[in-house]
Image 1 (cartoon, one colour):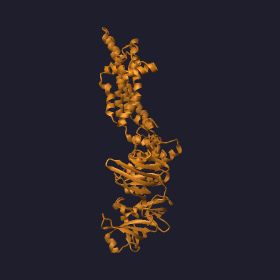
Image 2 (image 1 turned 30 degrees about the horizontal axis):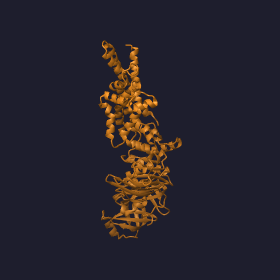
Image 3 (image 1 turned 90 degrees about the vertical axis):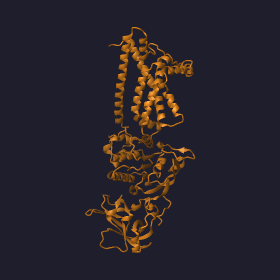
Image 4 (image 1 turned 180 degrees about the vertical axis):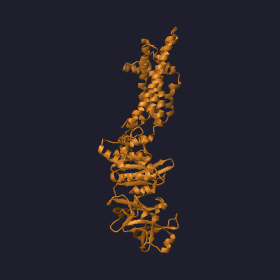
Amino acid sequence: MSLSPAEWEVIRLSLLIGLAAIAWILPPGIAVAWWLARFEFRGKAVVDGLIHLPLVLPPVVVGYLLLVTLGRQGVIGQWLYSTLGVSLPFTWQGAAVASGVMAFPLLVRALRLSLEAVDPKLEAAASTLGASRWRVFTTITLPLAVPGLLTGTVLAFARALSEFGATITFASNIPGETRTLPLALYTLIQSPGQESAAARLCLIAIAIALVSLIASEWLARRTRQRLQERDG
Amino acid sequence: MANVTTTPQASDPRLKLQVEQQLGAFHLSVALNLPATGVSGFFGPSGSGKTSLLRLIAGLERPKQGVITLGEQTLLDTRQGIFVPPHRRRIGVVFQEARLFPHYRVRGNLTYGMRKPAAQRFAEIVELLGIEALLERMPGTLSGGEARRVAIGRALLSEPQLLLMDEPLTGLDGARKEELLRYITRLTQQVDIPVIYVSHDAEEITAIADHLVVMKAGQVRASDKLGALLQRFDLTHELGGFDAASLLQGEVVAHETAYGLTHLALDDNYQLVLPGTSAPIGSHLRVRILARDIALALTPPANTSYRNQLSATITDFITLPEAPYTVELRLSIGRFFLRARLTRKSWDEMGLAKGMQVTALIRSVSFTAC
């Protein structure tokens, strides 16, 4: 089956928003996961709870909260608009922010487990060999947590692709700008006589999911091999 | 007697520490001056605080209160708020478990701590430890002894100013243990880095240490030259009890290949005959003699199988409360001291006393060359 230009547009936009979401949540995700894995502090349970909130809240609530804070009248949104001229609602960047927030806990969860499994004794050994904290993290801790990093990234990417509620609330359903695959599918279902078009989008969604799963598996294997071949 | 009892060390005390640390119910309270060269052994039963002390020196633990200086450098001073983090201390550590990085090859592990490329030094240390063949292997495929050797090489290649070794022979079987101990001894002689070696094994520590720190319940029981501590009656229990021993050092002067014997000159007047070793003539050897392997005679006996007959003077004796039917004695042989142990009955029947001239008899086969 050949895809129509409209379908290509939906796929392009979905992937763009999904990748952008991953790109922005990776650095803070790694930092937070490391923080939670390696340090004990007062209020850790509260921080942990806050991070996991998007998993348990209705996505519409998250979208609404984003609107309140990042909307043009919001606390942060106002500042963003007046100083940087950036407005997030109703843009694809806004959709990336919304799906990123929803995917964040999944990334942190998987990565944190993996980081906790890295033996701190190896990190201590590295530090006695003259490695700074940063070098220990980049050469010992993170490489040994790569399986968790990959799992977390794939889960987060899948979550970002399938994100619906927060996106439609915060970024709306604008064709060519924020209408990702789930939103396009929803639109089709809403209009009568579009059953076959909806079915086609369903198949596309399944195909994308399968391809990304296979790709991540391949990537995981390749990384493991690469790590083992590294000579430092 | 001067070199038998504890005397303040004249040698440069390069590592000075004075620390207090509370770890749960365990209290570590230590003040030490260690020499700048050779091997210092930290010896004591498990739980005596040896490893905790090592972690404090490496900077892996921060004590509640204390000062640690290495040469001119202050590594820790809690009063002034100085704490040099481990990666800036240049103190190499060989841990009990080798702690090799599983995602690097042996080569990558070895070069991890190198400050600058140094092919020459790399080749030397790899050869010294006999790990050339392992360079491209992953740590997971190494045997216990191989992994330890790589860990030692890795620590040495980071050019430490002090090397700490925490029971590096733990978990190895007899033959592997001996092999690795040989590597370590060779290395401490050839690489000019002061070493602190932690162990709870009396035989192991007497084989390697020059200076010894005896730890007990978080405190330093004694700290002195190994040879001097071994002569102390009050440390008999700590330093091996039944296996109490003395240490003699000498120069290899001859090999009797037909009989498989080696002649060791302690000085111009005294020689020992021991089981043949491969040590070249002119090299220095350390031998350990168990107190219970020494017999005494009032006159030099004729027609005996004892190959070593040394005229000695009884300088001191004691009966320890834990062994009321034996007598521990100290003999001087020229400028050397030897410990011996007799039954009370022999002591009484021979009419031995302090200051008497006797002949010390040692069977050649009883030596352990270290």
